[in-house]
Length: 170
Image (cartoon, rainbow, N blue to C red; front, side, top):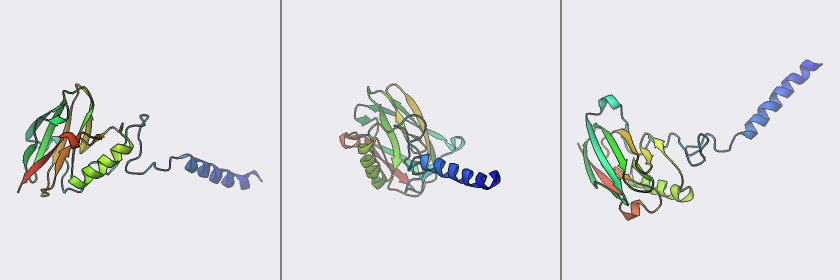
C-alpha cells in the first residue's frame, strides 16, 4: 500500500518545487545571484549586430577609454569588420557607469529597462558596469554591421553625452 503513494508524493513535491521557482527564472533579464540588482542572460552578448564576444587571444589591439562625469574620452572608435578589440574602460567619476556595445535600437530598449530597474548591474559579454575607480575589460569581435554604438545606458547618462559610434570599416 505504501508503494501506491510514493509516485503521488514524488509528483506532489515536483509541483511544489516548480511553483516555488521565480516566474522569470529563465527570462533573458532575470535576476541572478544574491544581488537583486544584477541580471544576466543570453540577450546580453547576443545583440542584433553581427558582432560577438571576442576571444582574448584574437585581440591584437587595445582601446583605452576613460569615463568621466557624463562623458567618454572618445566619441568615435574606428574598427575593421572581423577585428577583435580589447576595451579597457576606467571610471574616473564618483558614480557608476556602463560601457555597452549594441545597436541604437537595443540601447534605446535597454535604457527603458534601466529606467524600470536603475540599480541593474552588468557583467555581460557586451556590457559592463564600472564602479568609481574601477577598470574593466570587454573584448568584442566586430562583424560587418556598421550600425553599432557604445553607450552608458544608466538613466540620463547617454542623453547627457555618454554615447559614441563605432566606425566599422569593411
